[in-house]
Image (cartoon, rainbow, N blue to C red; front, side):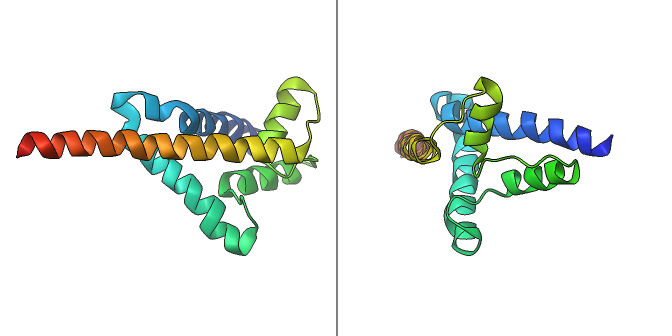
Length: 128
């Protein structure tokens, strides 16, 4: 029962987190939070990734541990590939999924930094 709850929790939380990382920069009220979540994602992928492998995500790791404890052994190395497989039933090329994921992430990262900088610069300018 507890493992089933955690499995559903990770599906909902991680998918929501991922979608927020994609779109959160676009809404003025969520821009600061988006910058935090995109930086956390970057830290997980690129800093923790030094020790655990490029693109390491602790949410994915915890979700995989839950699913393995449930006796489910998935054939995906990334959460995005796993999600696409579960949603569409298609086993997309992992390199393609990883490359598109990285491109989307970098684009969203740059957009987040840019819009947050513009807001910061505008607020700083208006204080002068």
